Structure formats: C-alpha cells, structure tokens
Image (cartoon, rainbow, N blue to C red; front, top):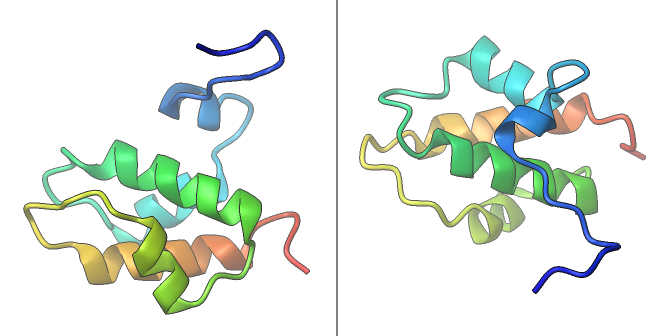
Length: 91
C-alpha cells in the first residue's frame, strides 16, 4: 500500500507541464513502432534517468526490461541516450 508521502506518476503526468526529455527523444527518433510497449518503456526510462542521468548501455539494458514484440530495442537504447543528454540533473 502506498503511504501518503508517496506519489504515482503516469505517462500523462510525465509530460504534464512540458514534454519530458524521454518523450521528446521518443518522438524525435521515432522509437515506437506499434506503440504497445512504449508507455512502459518510457516510464522505465524516465525512472532510470531520474536515478542515473548518464547510464551506460549495460545499465539501460538492465533497467528497461519491458518486452517489445516489434524489436525496437536499439531505438529504445538510442532514445534513452538522447534523453540523457537533455536531463536537467545531468552532471
């Protein structure tokens, strides 16, 4: 059960004020194919980048565990890396 201090963010909330860097990268690189898995991929990517604004390829692969039936994994990897360059907390 969630405590009062915890917050849930949905894909709609991710870009509520302005598009999140992950959403921008996905659109710019045409990451999605059928789109079925992309909400989960984007949310997992945003969570990863919030914790680690400059992940390695292996860290991305370890964190983004959603299955994509279209096989867009290389585009997902490119999308996360592009979004990482645009994260406000990147050191």
